[in-house]
Length: 286
Image 1 (cartoon, rainbow, N blue to C red):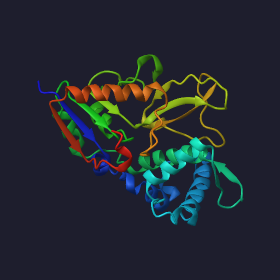
Image 2 (tube, rainbow, N blue to C red):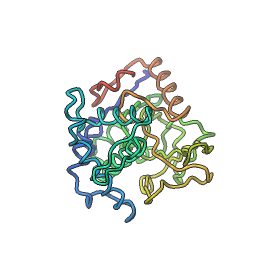
Image 3 (cartoon, helix red, strand yellow):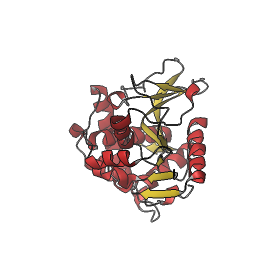
């Protein structure tokens, strides 16, 4: 059997309603808050605060005057926030005159992107996604740079299983009746909108670092002042996603393992198919 590997970019999810990476920030700013699927009143309050911050942020001349930076481009904006976070810098709040940590901006931007994807992607996928799943042969694998779960939803509908290639000892499948660690490999190099990882809530705390794989009905809730507390009691759950930025934060060994598995699949591939992927600047590390 010929070994086939499929590399999927944002264009592969466009038919299901997912915005392209270059459109993410503009989509965030033009989408009415009432159209997003907030999980609680606290989420709505926090969302409104962040949306106001983001609007003021992208219109600030301090960013727009730099010809090499387009603040409406998610890649440029996330590069800026990641670099600032690593440098310990802070950003001015739009109204209060106070400053906010770059980490807060980065985490909130990730949260907002996931909320946007959850709201934009069709609940019933187009027939083409089922056709793609049926065309896969045993031994084929998928490498995707997307956060959405259109591919795995299609595989679940057809076969009831797929393989994220996450390490079993550090992965908690909080998805009753679903096997996400066997079958066709779905290798998500940038993480996934339904992966939550336990990060330290405060400096010096020892978080467990486990990844919780969840159904979309309970993917991510900000919960007001703090992110959801992990069952270990030492950390909070944050989305395990790597934004399309030059600075790649792999979140420990979990995504590193996914990347290693993907490299092995590519080495063994006889045929390689690239679908909807334009190889943006931030992905040159691939």
